[in-house]
Image (tube, rainbow, N blue to C red):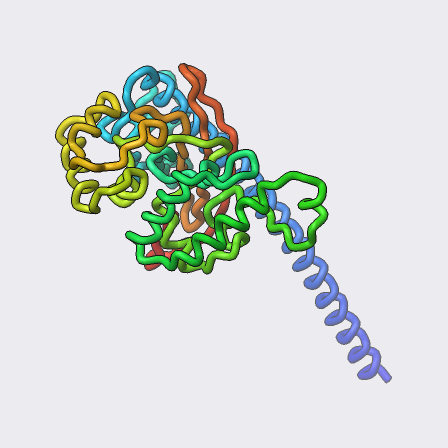
Length: 320
């Protein structure tokens, strides 16, 4: 009898220890989860503030640069290579929060500014519900130099016009595609993903029609926007502007061969639309922000902002 009582007591003790251990493990997990959530929330808020500060810095650079031809030798065109956030804080003599163990030592910031008017603007292709002949011809030459099927351009233009039609009859049509806001969304207009990837460096979608900046556009875009020239002529323009940027559109026009179809309404040497890229790396977490900004005189405002977060490994390079 006593042996049974001792066995029952031992079993009860073991059950008690198991229950206490289970409750302790559960409490510890809940505490760990709360700490992780708080840490992630703090990291998210801090990242947002840092990237907002980086955007304000870019806006200041663009504002100070206003009033002159925009070209690739200006301060805004110089990318910020990845650097420790502590480097920027240490440069501030009023900052007293920096220590050797500061979290800023583990945070890396990089970014760049891209001239969106150095690309063909799809918004110029359809204006007031009608396809524009000259922009369509420019896109035709771009498709040609990139080796893309002309039939895909026809499909894209037709669907873009259809998506731009805001009439009630069109909106009620079940087959009306959505109007893309980003280049990646051109698949909505019937383009294959590989075609969209090929067009990515050379096209953009802006809120309004815009000319191409002769000082920043790549040779393929110059070949597309200027008719009756060869790709070699466009590459010659790029080489000439690297020696000295174009102060006005006539500086580029005089370098073109006889017979070139140069339309001053399609080109410019000034830019109103830019894209600011910010990249923040905290250990293995990479947070990227892409902002479209509009500059009007000395006023520079962000009109679109989007942010994404990914995890990186030493063998993985984060690409835009």
